[in-house]
Structures are given as C-alpha cells and as structure tokens.
Length: 269
Length: 288
Image (cartoon, rainbow over all chains, first blue to last red; front, side, top):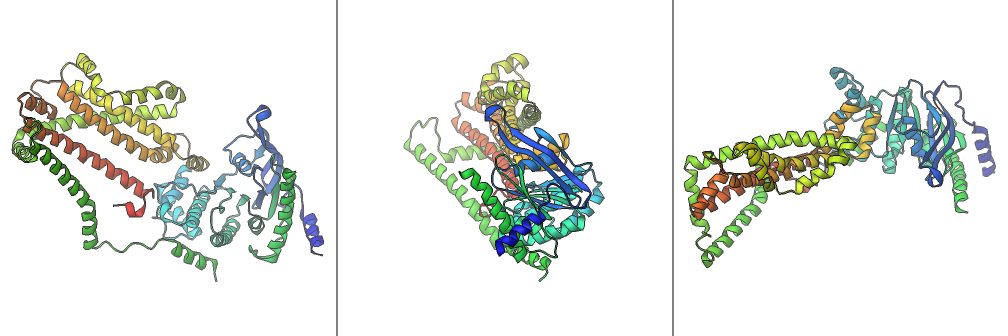
C-alpha cells in the first residue's frame, strides 16, 4: 500500500538534528528570535537547533510565518538572536535573496567585481576571477550588460556569481528562484546543483516549494509556523541524478506536503 | 540535450532583440520628432505676444516681438551684453559650485548622523522655502555692496535644495541593496562609496537641478537689488534699461535671462535621463 511505504520512508529517514558523517559547518543551538517585547511581541523562532555538515545542502521549508527568512538573517549576522546561538566557525557566509539585489548602475561584471573588491582582491586578479565566475554561471560574454538588460533568470545567476565571489563556504539562499518561471527554475536547479558540488559549498536553502526542496536538498527540514520550530526532518535518498519530475522526488514531496498541511491545519482550528 | 545548451537557448530567447542599427534617416527622424514641438511652442508664444502687442495694450511698455528681437540682435553685436553675461555666469558658477560643496557635505552629515538630522533636518527644509531675496539685507550688511553679497544670497538659495536632494537619495536607498552590500562585506566608508552614494545619485541630480533654479533666481534678484558700482551684470543691465525707460532693451534682456535658465535646465534634464536610462528606469520608447 502506498501510504504504508511513504510512512516507512519518512520514519526511516528522519534523523533529528544531526548531519550524517560530515564535519559540522553550521550549528544552530536553541536559536530563538522574538520581535518586540511584552505581550505584543511575536516569537518568530522558538529554540531551533540544527547541525549542517560541510558540503551539505539543507532545505528549510514551512508555511508562511515560520520564520524561515529570520533564520537566514540570523545565520548571516544581519540580525541578532534573542536566545541561543549560531556557530559558523571561521567560515565565510554569503547570501542570496528572492530579488537578485544587483546594483542597477553597475554592469553584471562590475557587480561581481564589487564583491571581490570588498574582499580587497587586487585589480588584475579581480578581472580574471570575475570572468571565471561569470563563466561558471554560464554568462560568458554578458559581463558588459546592465542588470535591466538581462532576464530574471540571468540576473539571479549574476547574483549567484556575486555570492560565489565572496569566496564563501556557506551559502544562504532565501527563496532565490521564487520569482522565476518553472522552466528557468528547473534549469537553474541543475546549475546550482552542479556548482555546489564542484565548489563543495554548504547550503541553507529556504523555499515554499516542496518539490524544489526535495530536488535540491540532501536533507529537508520542516518548520512549524508561529513560532517556527523544527517539527520534522527528511533525509533525501542519494540515489543518482535527481529531477523535479522523477517519481522519487514526487513521492517524498507528497509525504512532506501532507505533513505541512497537517501543520497548517492546526492553525485553522 | 545538455543543460548548458538549453540554458544558452533560453537566454537568447529571453533577451530583447536589439533594435535595428541607427542609420542616418532614423537619427534625422528622431531629431525632428524632438524638435518640432519646441519650435511649435516658440511660434505660439511669439504669435500670442504679437497679438497682445497689436491690441495696443500697455503699448509703451509692451513692445512686439519684432522690435525686441531686433534690439536683442543689435545688443548681441556689442561687447556690453556679452560682458554682462560672462560676469553673471561667473558669479553663477562660483556660487553654484560653492553651494554644491556645502550642500553635499551638510546633506551627507545630516543624512547619516541621527542627532544632526533631528536638529537640522527641518531647518534645511525651512531654508529651502525661504525666498532668497529676504537674505539681501543681511548680505549687504555683512559684505557690503560687493559681489560677495550676491554670492551669499545665491549660496543660501541653492545649498538647501542640494542638501535635501542628497538626504532624500540616502533615505531612499533600497533596503535590499543595503542588505546585499552588507552580506558582501561592504562596511563604513566602502558602503558609502560603492553603494549609498551611487544609489542616491538620481535624487541628488534632482536636488542639483532644483538648486540651480533657486541659484539662478537668487542671482537675478541679487543683481537687481544690490547695485554694485562699476560691476557689469545681466541684472545691472536690466535695472539700467528699466530706469532709462527703454522697455525694448529690458524685454531683450529678459529673453537672455530666460534662455540661459532654460539651457542649463536642459543640461540637468539630459543628465537625469542618462542616469535613468543606464539604470533601466526609463521605458525604452521614451528614451530619446
């Protein structure tokens, strides 16, 4: 029976809080974030603990109000937690947003170069590295274009190249493909997958899209809403190339979707 | 099919096809399209002016376009007009550049230092609404009837607009860009230099444009009110012609004032268009 086997998959793969056989890259311990104080304050994150292994791709999924973006801001150091702590060791952290956030007055190449400049890379090396990074996201020859001359998918790739230019070990992605059409998104999944493997990046990827999470993640973390807590974890079986439309992806995605709906239903009653 | 190939295909499909090359005919058509409305406007104004002059209303003061334009042509043959224009523009340039420096420094400080903002933010706006002629008595008392008094009025007229433009620009820097800059590791001065300043540029140019309008008005007011012996200027020319009851010449000088103001304003408009086009803030069809 299909439901039975789904349950089995879910139970067999749920490994709470631990990254399997990899050195730890990011550790969140009892991380909480409250906005405002007193009875009117909102608890966005409630004691979230999570360990992400070096080179691991972890997707975080949850309904609205689960504090997904807050979580990333805390890891990026853009915001301070009200409880618990984030440890990233000496690793450099880069972040990508749903909007590419490119500087509109600079060309694609200069946008990438600015990240290198911020790290004080010397000029000659900067130009070389910029060309290399644009090649990595397959935008060779598009360096002189300005952001408004590029398509949404291309802009997001420039943003990825810029994030890579920060020479980060940890890449935080806040729904980076949320505003793209499905076809572009599929292609970018393949590209991101390739680049992360090549570069050995540790990724924390926040999304609303369950299939996307299963397609990309080594592990999928489900957060509850208001406040955000880790309620479930799914290890995605590593059995060869994945696609957004394969039966394996669809199967795990539907298990996770059911769990998410259950969680959302709690808020309806 | 390889992902790479599909991606390249999608990229080329998504990019707008580049417009056909700019041949001579196209450029001429564009130039004509930009020019004829202006010519029409000038013709309309001249026509109305001629009608009013023909009606004989206040005919001693209000001369028709023909005598005024021929008077202007006549004045353009003499050095006096050019000398006046030169010296006025020099005052304008010195005053405006000084206002630019003061306005930028004050604007930057006020935009980034909250206590200064609380103290001076509204004062700057108040200064901006103040008619600059009101400063003339102060200028004369402090500097005496010399060119410095006029410069003082010009700077006080222009600097607040420039400062305000910069403050607005800094305030309206998109938070997303700031976050992107911070995650990139841009801090302190580098964040200013590479992110906040360029992001403020459109509002700053708008402030500069407004500052110019104020500077030009203040300059004219100053030159008309403050009589500097032996100092030739457009304002001086206007006062002399007026007291000689030569209203044809007066009208000709008015045209000079108007034309200079419009030309400088056009330069600012061009700069503004250029910036917006580079940033993709302009509809391609509106870009002329």
